[in-house]
Image (cartoon, rainbow, N blue to C red):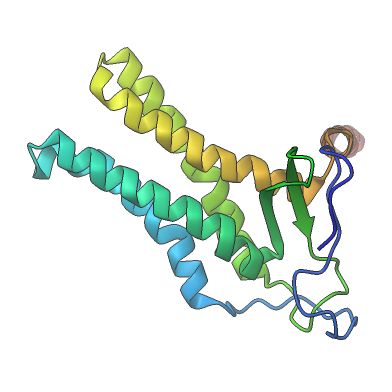
Length: 206
């Protein structure tokens, strides 16, 4: 494995065997890792459902809190170490060098590496679950704060922290440096502006 020279750069290194052929293959629509896709959503959706239903099915706050924290912890580990690598060819972690300095490493599989290309279906499932669930926990955090449910704040903050960390890590893997993220956002907004301008001109001419 290669060591990251800068914290703002994404390493493009192989996540699989070095002797795999470097041929570009078209993306497939079918789900090639059904078990990974299932557990990518299972733990995080289960934690949300337990949080919503716990007061209805159980009167024990401690039992609900422990269950949610366990589900969130399992989700963090599974998404960080397994589903990201299998479903979209990305992974991130922290390593300590010989000098005792801590480095965050972000890796992405190059388009031509590996015998198996990424699946469109798996990619949609991965990013949908990765982005949607942290937003839900942020909503829960504001709801608990405004409804004065102080005892639940620690739980929802842990949900935001753990799932937000995975979201941030995989965005870094996918996009790379902050400059790339800014460039992508600018290109997207520019494209939307041109699209709207062209649409208005077409309507005006008709």
